[in-house]
Amino acid sequence: FLVGFVRGAIARTALPFLQQRFLKAPPPLRALGAWALSAPDGGTVGSDTLRGRVWIAQVIAAGCLPGCRDRLEAQARLPEHLADLEHPVAQVTFVVPTSAETALPHGLVALAQGDWFALTGPPERLDAVVSSGLRAAMASWARADAGADALEFAAVSSFALVDQNGEVRGF
Image (tube, rainbow, N blue to C red):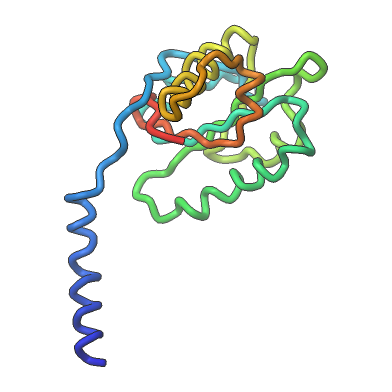
C-alpha cells in the first residue's frame, strides 16, 4: 500500500509539469476577422469585445426553441466544467434569423448571463462570421463542404473553440 501511495504522490506531483511540456493547443484553423453583432440589451458585441479572451461559440436558428433547448442547456452547464481554468472562458451564441422568426429566443435571453453573449444581426453580417468564418473552419477541419449558409450551419450541433486572437482552434 505504501509503495502505491508513494508512486501516486510522485506521479501527481510530476503530472502538471509534464502536461505543460507535452500538451499544446491545436493549431489555428481559420481567423474570424473583424465582426460586430447586436446583443439583447441593444449594445454591440464583436471581435474587439472578445479580443484577448478564449470563447466557445455555438450557432442556432432563431426559431429553434424548444427543439434546441438541450443544446442551450448543455451550453449553460459549460461554466461548471471550466471553473478551474485560470482565465474565464466566454460563451457566444450566434442566433441566425429564419424567414419566420427574427427575434432572439426568449429562453436563450433568460439563459445567457454573465460571460454568455447571445448575438444576432442582419444576414450579411452573420454570414461574415458564421459562414465565412466558423463554417469554413469546420469544413477545413472535417474536410467537408464549406458551401453552407449560416442557417444551414445552425443545424450542426457543435461548439467551436476560439482563441484569444479570434482564431478557431477546434470543434
